[in-house]
Image 1 (cartoon, rainbow, N blue to C red):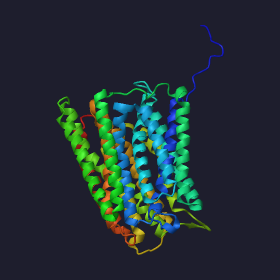
Image 2 (cartoon, one colour; image 1 turned 135 degrees about the vertical axis):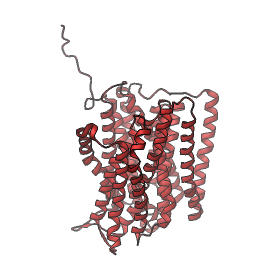
Image 3 (cartoon, rainbow, N blue to C red; image 1 turned 180 degrees about the vertical axis):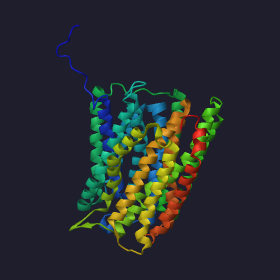
Image 4 (cartoon, one colour; image 1 turned 135 degrees about the horizontal axis):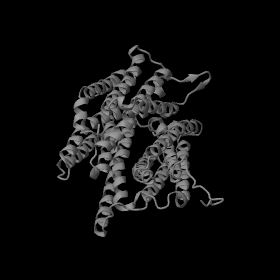
Length: 490
């Protein structure tokens, strides 16, 4: 056999296609930007004008945070559709990244409330374009049946948590020393770095990946949908600006509408699936089995997303964060969640591998995850039930660790189950339902935050925990029935 001397082996990224390095870097920078901005956003919204903030009420700040999070996940559905029908994943990610960077730049300028709303709208639109389509492109790096695919997505998940671990620390540090606007410019810089890597390495690493439009619109459809999209975008921006300028009442009008919008979209999708004549009875049964899991996901996200609003407020106002002569910035607590994920993910993955077919069913994992997350709220309530006005940071750490452990049981399982229960013809639409569960959870938070009293937060947390506990127990009680309805997919 002839030997080719000096033949170079193709370069890889930990044994994966080199395109994964590109997308890993892009996702890391985007998640750094998103979570860095989010770590200081609520403080900026309610801090006094004299201290560099906008001076909103604490309640309005938390409502706006919840609305922002809800819209991010709703626009992910639109971003997936635009990539499928108009842009292709590569251009969707590029346009999304540019739009996100522009939003962070606007946040970094002293433009007041109107400028902040424009910036948040830009970030919502950009994230909706970028977030779902990076994952689509990772999937396109691998041929059908390539055993490296799942590991490739695990590496992408690692990039998310690396970015979200370091960003609150760095952005919080800059914000504490140089002001909020300087803090917001750090995410803008990192998003710019991510875009430079994405574009600069695309020819060598992606080689056409994500360029194709899966179901392109014909010219007439394109003109119609571009017009509809433009009108819709102007309407949404105008509504948010108008609502916020009318104060708490106007903002609450939008907040009250958000859960109804999410429920209407989810109900329409479920009805569309179940009435599709192309589906067999087993496929319809699997979709019906997914409905309780969708509710469980909504309950979980309603708890988990409190970390950036009600819990951030408590950390800022009633948690003792002094270690020696150093006071830990409130924003740094947002790094606990990704740190726990980085540490515990390999341990749980190893446990499931070792248990093999003896591991709990996906339904049991989701139910257990919801209960564990609810225990985080119980732990957080204990010092306030005891009448403490100043709370040790360890209570916050313990609560966040439990909530993150619940996330590790529930969130990856929920994504996998969504894929497993989906009919092939509706996979992307079923995945959209998981995003809607998060959007609905945050929409519910936008309504209920008016009941939050920072002097007695245990009432609020225990009420949420009770609902989550009941939902988790109901799921565990019906797990065998749901597994049967899954027709072998669960």
